[in-house]
Amino acid sequence: MLGRGRLGELGVSHYGRSFLRIEGPGAEQFVHFDAFEGGGSWEGQNNQVRWASTGTRPGSTNRNWSWIYNVQPSASREFGREGDRSAHPVVDEWMCLEWFFDADAQQAQFWYQGEPVEYLALDAAAGMRTEIPTFQSLSVGFQKFQQTDAFVVWVDGIAFDTERIGCDG
Image (cartoon, rainbow, N blue to C red):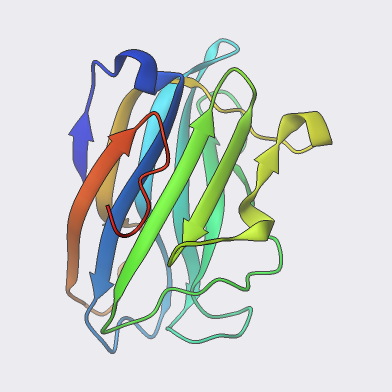
């Protein structure tokens, strides 16, 4: 993961974008991998907030790799939002990943290949648990948490801004 601190206004609210490519066939075992991680203080604890994927091997069922929202608080149990698990990472193709976070409004959104992932539209005002901190660090790339078969991953085109960047920018 490529990390950055000293975020200024981007720590409170930002749009981000990266391109990710996983060489097939990918791992056949269950794996949780992160493409984005941000850390910061939220109500007295340190939260690590992630756009991630979990599942077993590439595919398009709800058991295959699917994009999720994941939070690891320092003082309580990990939680996340998986929704209907209808957005799936693929192999052997470049994937455009985009996101938005607003710590003040407690809102977040994830786009995959330029399209919003509806189950990853988060809003605390709608009763969703978000716990988005003011970020003190942002990291983009690829990290996985299980011992699995090896696979190759490329990351490119990392960008942050106060406005949505898009897949063409």
